[in-house]
Length: 373
View 1 (tube, rainbow, N blue to C red):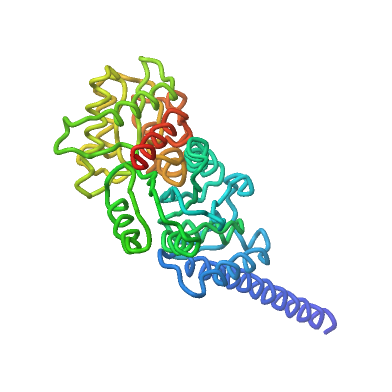
View 2 (cartoon, rainbow, N blue to C red):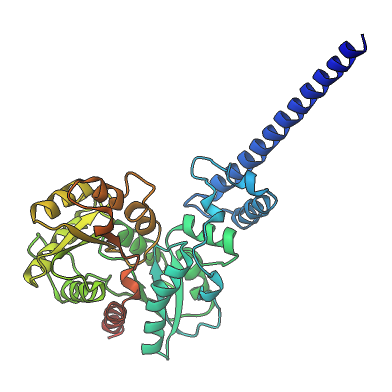
């Protein structure tokens, strides 16, 4: 009788322990799920009255999670990397959101990146080059991607102005002459949206737009210009790839009519004699620039060694994930190495944005100079 009693007690204890364990798992999952919801709330392109508080709430909730719970975070856009990925020291970056602007301002507008080291080297590098060239002007920053602004603010506590905030700051500071220097690659959709947003302030000050990096688009694939030539020479020199190795430059791609710019850059590379350079895009627009097409072209050209590098101002999410992530079967690195012609040790990645190349920074300086007149 005593043995039966002890066995019953043991069973009760085991059931209780299992129930406790299951309850703990449920608590872990629910806490992680709640953080995922908070991240999704700030993963938006519109700033609201609660954005600042929402950013703080998401980070505070994340900080309270255990390491185990952090690995369980997920949502429509949320994952453990949102707060957990180390992208460098944000304190090395200057958000350039100070007042005391004066009457003359150069507003450097970028899409933005949450990769701290890249932001400092690329966008920060461009801003510093412009500031050094024009010491009598106040250089300030704006990002067009609120999603990125929120990410940086929530994770690192660094506050960056969006375009509206930057323009309101300029008005409040009494700016009379404004030069807008976009760091965008081309006259694409983002550039058009930027012009529309800033022109709403045309009655407040004199506004002049400087050219994006690659200058005017042109009518067809044969149109090239001095900017495209300078960028082509700068990136090829910086990559320093030997002639027996293919240099694949991965751009973003766009459905905008400006997507012909990528074909023009390929034309420019060809005319400069860079036969080992191939221009592709993440979006596969224009046609024939997707990863599969570029791999086929590189293979047909007879190259067995490949260097992948972004044709983007920053080396952020696309460069680190879409291009170089070895654990993602869809990344360009993985697609190249899955092709029998390219051994894994013959495919390398250069995580470097155009904006960190001094020669490219000077192109922006020249565009700013042309806008100032």
